[in-house]
Amino acid sequence: MPTLDPEDSIFSQLEAYGHKKIVFCSDPETGLKAIIAIHDTTLGPALGGTRMWAYKTEKDALYDVLRLSKSMTYKSAIAGLNLGGGKAVIIGDSRKDKTEALLRKFGRFIKNLNGEFITAEDVGTNPKDMEYIRMETQHVTGVPESIGGSGDPSPITALGVFMGIKACVKELYGNDSLTGRSIIVQGIGHVGENLVKLLRDENAKVYASDINEERVGQVAKKYGAEAVSNNSIFDIDADIYSPCALGATINSQTISKLKCAIIAGSANNQLQDEIIHGKMLLEKGILFAPDYVINAGGIINCYSELMGFSKKRTMQLTENIYEATRNVLKLSAAESISTIEAANKIAEKRIADIKKVKSTY
Ligand code: NAD
Image (cartoon, rainbow, N blue to C red; front, side):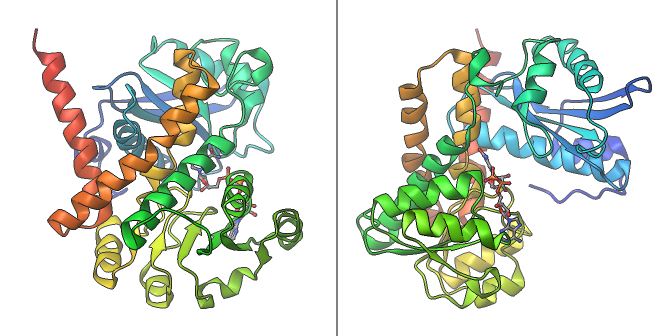
């Protein structure tokens, strides 16, 4: 993907990333200032979460929503879903500025898009907020289970990451057993804890780290993992590093310290720079499972909710992440390109192929 320059004009930015539509939502009465970005709808309606964040500038908000909506197109495409890519950002502090009225007004903007955009929760929003949006529009997923939604996606996301890890292990070691393999899980939140459980169930040696030391201690005790300090994770000699906290943890500084053979985790946008750091990992011989390929469980959960699929079907679709990851690794090896480039190629090919189907009788 080309790098965006937030200083460029809005239309140059849309052109650089190939966006279809941007909707600026303004409602002074409720204080709503939001941007909905619809990147591509070739495969289906654009689905993506709504992030509420106190962006320093409107340019920062636009930059974020353009970048995130484009990755949603790729994530759904490679997961084999009939969904396009979109994302929304609400500018504001979710702890202070979020009200029922603001969210319902935002819901009305989504309603006016007639199903071209469907939203879900993201940083700064939660299932209760989705319930408010649902009061104004049907085009929202991730509402609480009590009102027919799919509930917390984190266990499904963790399952997808687990399958992605196994696919990498198979590629490197010839079989996908995790017994005896060692893994550092960074970030023991909703996804991290579920992942630690799956890994320990298969007798992997797990090092768990988080800035919240009390929480990491509790989770380590519960599942028999080893709690480690967040500052020392790059000193540990482990087979796998699983970033499940923040993005951009893989950069020039950390790559030089990494001792692992595999990187596979849930955090979005793990590579600080897709091209530069993807290539550095390739050259260093570290197998990187592209984040959007293996953390697709959350979007699969939303898709299942929309389609009315059973939990069993959701799990099966998520288990397909194993094959999706294998295909990415095979293409990367065959063409000597980074795994992120390989994933992008596969996603772009599916979109181009389906575009042809839709343009012909
Ligand atoms: P979460 O907020 O529940 O957990 C994140 C954890 O990371 C917290 O325990 C936090 O204390 C810890 N953390 C924050 N900064 C850290 C740091 N510098 N070092 C170590 N730990 C740190 O979030 P989550 O729902 O578990 O999601 C984790 C990651 O996976 C996020 O990047 C999220 O965007 C991504 N993701 C989540 C889902 C999902 O279904 N929840 C789906 C796709 C992607």
